[in-house]
Length: 304
Image (cartoon, rainbow, N blue to C red; front, top):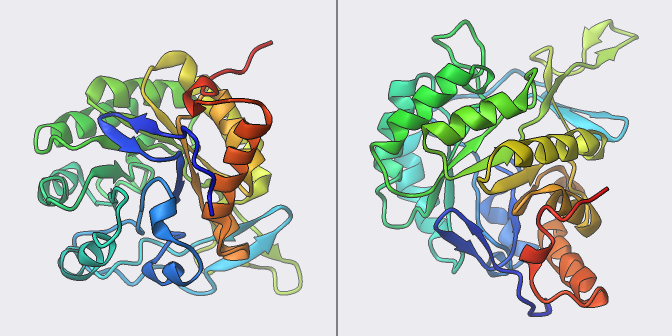
């Protein structure tokens, strides 16, 4: 049983009972067999696309030192199935549902956001602007500050729910993109998606994932993400959701101290199915050990 402490955090107008949620793509309804969804801060299912998509070629995952590379692609059953099946499944729980959206154009982001952002059971939207912009030479929306600003500005017009911009770490300056998302109307930022990576089988001389390259996740990338959280917190007052390399409560606390208001757990859940609730308990234990009554006192508390 998780110890009850004052762990409530705010993501825009959205209140979470604690700062722990799954990373999109690393969470599904079948995980209820391993953990109680009502004990985490929010539910974030895999990113949804407007039309069904098959995902990338296999193999889709390979292990690396300190992490894994995945090249799943945005495999999706489409918006209609999401509305008919996914939302009703997750609306049975007492914690907020954050819908993650992936789209091929700004127009499509707006179209999907208008539908999901006005659905009574959807509490917030995570805009996956770290996915490729198919009308922009394959670059992610979040690689361009002007595109990021325009996308958030237009989506903001069609819904009043909190908008979370999921940033890509594959940029020269994440601060520039963060400021653009802020100016466009984002209520929070997820920092960040996976790092673009590649692994090669030296015997076959072929890439170890079918798409050639994929996203590196796991503990190897945590120091990079902690740095990006810290940098982002210096240029915006928006709540930050740290994502990348959280394997335990201490990893989560490191991100919170760097400036994150909440964190997402991804790769760790593949190793330990109870990782989400384990992290909640470990944060609570830390607070008790240090005599802390309010998790918010830890946010951005790093000092030299």
